[in-house]
Length: 79
Image (tube, rainbow, N blue to C red):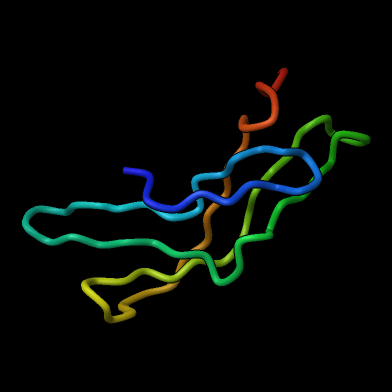
């Protein structure tokens, strides 16, 4: 479930940078280390990515780190 969005001032894309996750009876939330981790490569590969470091929280306690990569929020990827 999407819980936090960031809107890019460059591309106007709305990225779901924070998510709520459930694993069994446990609940987690992701949060980016910083919201602006957008990579605009339209001039080369034609794709805009949001990719970067995120933290994982259980309740209010950080329990892990990760890397999130998203595409398709500016335009569908053409293969």
